[in-house]
Amino acid sequence: MSKYRKLVVGATLAAIFATPALAGKMGLGRAALPEEIAAWDVDVSPDGTGLPEGSGSVEDGEMLFSETCAVCHGEFAEGVDNWPKLAGGRDTLNRKDPLKTVGSYWPYLSTAFDYVHRSMPFGNAQSLSANDTYAIVAYILYSNDLVDDDFVLSSENFLEVEMPNADGFIVDDREVAEKSFWTTPCMSDCKTDVKITMRAAVLDVTPDHSGDETAPEATKEPEKQQKEAEAPAEVRPTMAALDEDLVAKGEKVFKKCKACHQVGDSAKNKTGPILNDIHDRRIGMVDGFKYSKTMAEMGAEGMIWDDANLAAFLSKPKAFVKGTKMSFAGLKKDADIAAITEYLKSVSR
Image 1 (cartoon, helix red, strand yellow):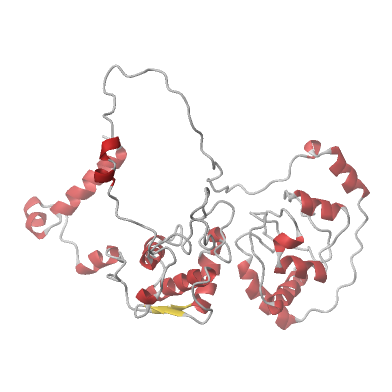
Image 2: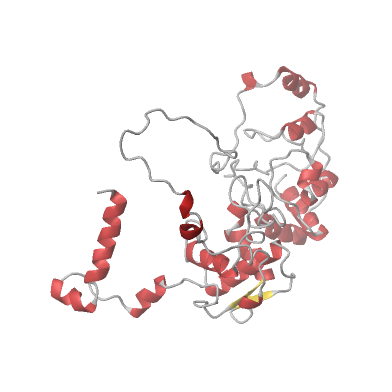
């Protein structure tokens, strides 16, 4: 018997013998307490059955999502590396390679609530309160442009939210509709040779935990070595006094970056490079991190992370660096950009 089947059988027997009738008779276990049953009875149905009392706003959800979800799903639910995208994909379901997200594909909002409340965050499941879950789901809706930024999701208005793909599913009637196509599987004298007739179209589905590492010096292209050797020397201007209030605000905004970047004495390269001492330094020059080709070339040509370049990059990373591996969509507010720039200056002295 497999380990899995043993676990299932064991759990089933434990449940049977824990019933009042058998627990005492067999001398095994005890009847489950109401609060113990309630702890596992967390499923939510499309009609709202099982929804707990509570509410949560998009504003609160943004902070919670940044702290508990963004490390895998991106700051704007756009996905990090190969972790799932939760936003986007509208009007792609008729394509060969559709983007299936909460906003484009899921027919019931209850599925999103149930999954977040039951299984998230990864590694710390069921640590979110009902209000936290309402807030996070509200932010996911906002990230899919389904609600406004002042929206508050609650047990009272939950069923009023309309999902774009609510009518995109049908009852599975294959047992009747496709029965004529079924064939009896071969049970004896089957063919011995097996040929591959098709191959998977998408293979990059496993998240990469290892991060990027710089290739050994000997493997660098001669042209790149030449560019780095000829790159103009850095001249760092004298830094003006810091605005401590702005630094404090920037440290809060930096929570959006912590999923991929670290600062401080113990900082290490993760999905993104450490950001110590980068202000007014050449772009793409953090030791031990493998940058995109474009960013490495920018640094080799002498471009630096001054205020203007930081602002351009932080607002629209993919527009500033073509082909960047950074999945972050960008900061929307100029005030946030100014604050995080000041914070990066504070760790660049």
